[in-house]
Image: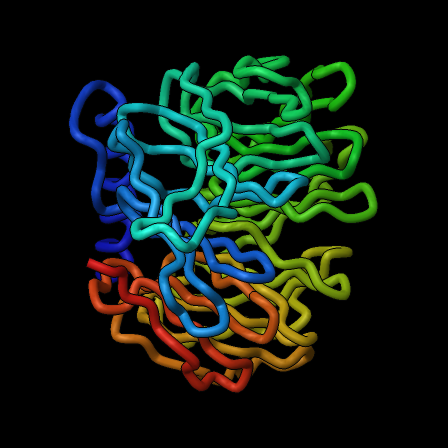
Length: 366
């Protein structure tokens, strides 16, 4: 029953974003996006994008556009350290923001150095940045390709129509771009010719594929993890799971780590899809992708627990339990594990030391 309620919540969230594209109000119940560089964490939460100092959790600045943007996706970094973040609001704007500014002013604000308003739907996916080229999937079904080295506002160099809503961040092997769509397909785009090959899958794809040695690994709402041979598009193996797979897997030492919406956490051999270890079911649905911290796997659950798993073990250790739900991927920032709770008005971001002790929590300035 609990899993069915979560599925209903997720479906309603997807529906809210879809309906708001038709002229309604932007959705407010989207969970936050998160990224970090060497100095700050960047939290995309509702109508604001926050810069938060890593050393002490203090707010550096807060950005809210004049166009009433709503932010959901994880920000991406350009090659020169600027931020790319798209809006899920009715403005449908993709921003490039320079986070460096004069901190001596009373109300510091970052600088919008470029923006694109030509998409027809929301920016749900995080863009992929390869040098000066940006591959930005939009919910209108197009993959927008920008060259940031071009001077002036018009940096759009190509648009690839993939036919269905794109909500997943792409991956690349250096020659091709891989992006999943909600119409049960994986698209393989040649980076030179922009020729597209399409692989049919059993369910919608919302996660970023893992790519290694000519193979691609992706989960779907068909309750399966799939390995695909990149050269010919053939499926090498399919490993069923108990429920939908919302996010992409972590691939470490030829083992795939990921969770499903029933709260199972899996460790599969990349070679054949067989279990490296028995799956475990800690305490809640798993929507976020795991991260690697000093050779250990860290993952979060909907119930607000942060777990650490030793390589070769299927006994996760609880590092911290937050009194909020967690749907956002955790982020490793130096010696800190950053976790963004969902709809927690007192702590929008929590920084943990690697032993699980809390270093700071962030509450926006009023």
